[in-house]
Length: 318
Image (cartoon, rainbow, N blue to C red):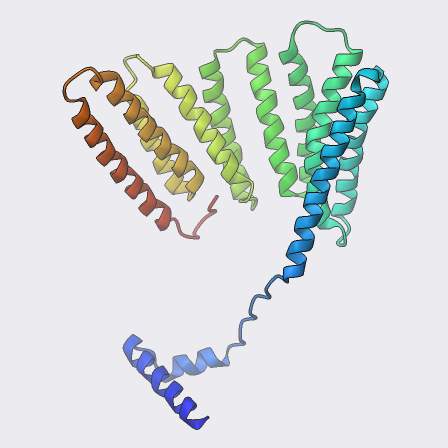
């Protein structure tokens, strides 16, 4: 035993000399309380959780299949009760269980189920009891607008990330429906929606809900790039699309967002592929252009990888 201790002391002394660590620093570190080791998740807990979620999915799928089979034989009121009723019940249970530590983890699945059933039930209600005006976009605006208000208010009260995620999703539906109802150009709508989602993702990341932000950074960046490309394609400002991609890459660094970095680099590579195909496909230099394009893609992907590796924990990392 003493031999092992001596070997350990020799190794500690060698490491201290190598890194310039003094005896006082070692003593101070030893005086600090030892950090508690993370407790591993029991295997049984993982299996139990997996089976629980799987069972819930099967139950939900079975109920949905049963309702679809009985749907033609149901009246309007029954259809609303079957769809909207469980949505309201799931949302109410989620709010109640959020306040009980024993059931708090079950609140998120309930909110997600409600996020699917509530719009379905509201659309069924409008279809069954409201005269049709031939404006489905207006109906979608009413439904999603009401759900944005409901989930936004619930998030302010409960501060749950799942409610914020659903509120942003319904906001996207409401804004998209409003622009479709106003007959705004699809590219302008995509551009506007993408910018709004980037702002909301930044808000989510800044208020401590970094887990919500990655998906909306990705969706917002993708919509922004798609709308911008549709507006500048075959026009005098088409090359400005490269500048937009570069700006988004820079923004992803400022926000420490790997998801926004990914969609920005994907947009850049996609545009370079489109440009070379459009302007070099019918010339002898096409094979050379393909080789150059491949080298550019490798260089861009390597640069993006280094940027992603350099995003430290100084800010949110969605």
